[in-house]
Image 1 (spheres, rainbow, N blue to C red):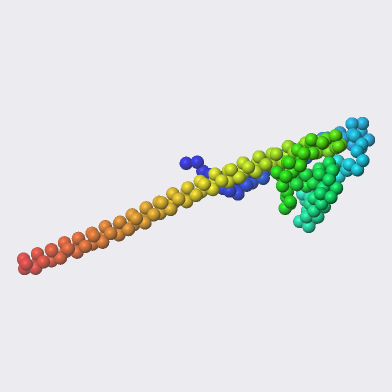
Image 2: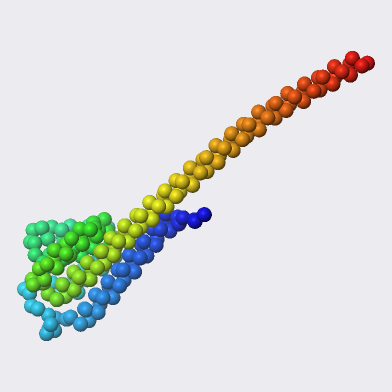
Length: 207
């Protein structure tokens, strides 16, 4: 019989897969950060657009910060995107949503935001477009891994339930067998008592 993985093991596998995806995304980010710097001929000038490293630095602070810092960054990004909506503020908020490890993390919402941003790339710098593209890939992998983890946990739960039902059935059958054995022993004792009584009566008559 195939043995099912414990729920914690499944959760650890899914978490590891997400971390691999995030690591790949960070490696890609470093590559284009090395190639796209202020003053480079390929960088478009868009007034008010943050430097690419500003986005990455905030993501690092969000991922490694304490809950208070995380809540502050999330609230600021959310309110700024709503009060002054634009590609840069929306990208910042999407990156916050895409960053795991805090209560406001929402891969599905980040996916929607990145897709919307990539329909208006003319208002974004090449670095912002690269950030949106890379992290769209990352959150899509997170969503896939999350769905697969949920499916595996569901399968594991059903298998555990089936095993529990089989164990309960075996215990019930054992209880019935014990009851039947007790009845058989009682009948055997009664028969033995009757036989002993008959022998005693026979011995008494012969004496």
